[in-house]
Image 1 (cartoon, rainbow, N blue to C red):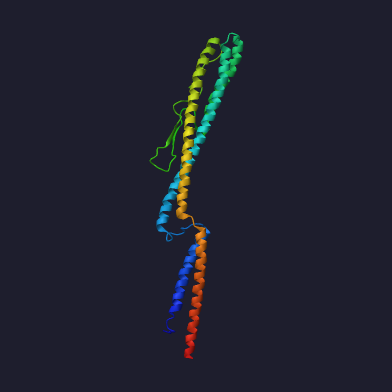
Image 2: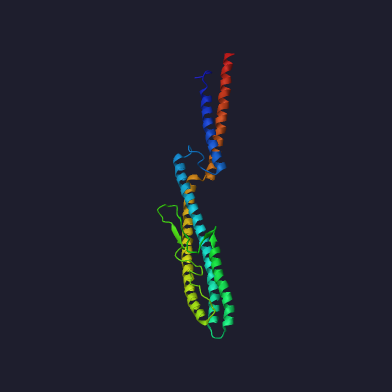
Length: 272
């Protein structure tokens, strides 16, 4: 029925044009952001899953940072112990020379001067082997590091509190002023070398564990990131196809609206 009161064809054309425009806006938003979900209305369930994954990913990132910090701490501690080990080697040479009957007490006095300086240097290294002013090898360090996003996984304990590595704790309290004293120091130095080697072995074992933990963290992050992309990353190829299709629909809707308006004008001519 021809009517000038209600232009249904125009109304339908406008409705389809508005719907297509909304869809085009959504497609262009996704293309510009690179995200398939830009508001909760796009995919409420998908957004909820993605949000939960994002929290897990942030937890894994922090776990990775924790593992790196722990490794840096252990490397610092190992560096200090390595220097002490080198000093003990030189101290052993001095004590061995002083214990020999081929040197006099005067010469032993010279050897002892260097020996005592090295003893003081051991204490200096212990005092300066720190991480942000926290001493690492004085027998007080004991901290835990979380290396998983799963709260049920126990943290790794970095416990360096079982042994201090200062001169007194290593039993280096004597001198080289006599052959007997030098012999006593040789025994003490041998024990100190064993203690330092044991400490470095403990540090090395922990470093190895954190290396493996870091690898596990990296794998978990990679897998989680892949899963997150399924929900969030926009399919640009599909969006391009959708854009073309919607463009055709918009052109058709505009053309239909134009024809509807022209038809209405033609009807009004019948009244003249």
